[in-house]
Picture 1 (spheres, rainbow, N blue to C red):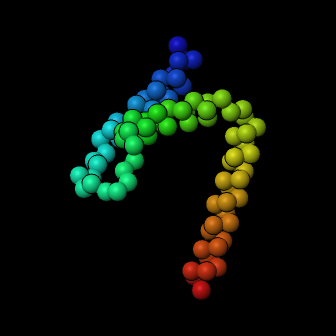
Picture 2 (picture 1 turned 135 degrees about the vertical axis):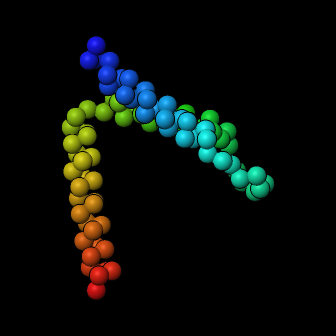
Picture 3 (picture 1 turned 180 degrees about the vertical axis):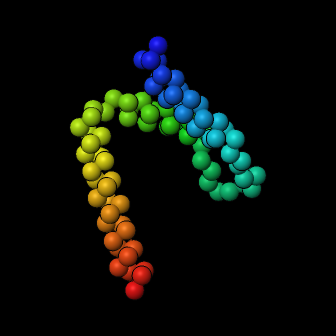
Length: 85
């Protein structure tokens, strides 16, 4: 029973992403370039990326968290130095 909870939660998140992508209004103006196969291509991209992320091991997620923490800290120090003077 409890083993199905993460799968159900992930399914709900994926479906919510797909609904948001599907509900997004496209511009009626004809432009020289338009993204192909909208909203199917973005939805397939979300599904593929979630599938790939699900196969990452814990060490990869830990390294990702460390780099994100470092990047967030670095960004805030940069903003503090350059915009608060």
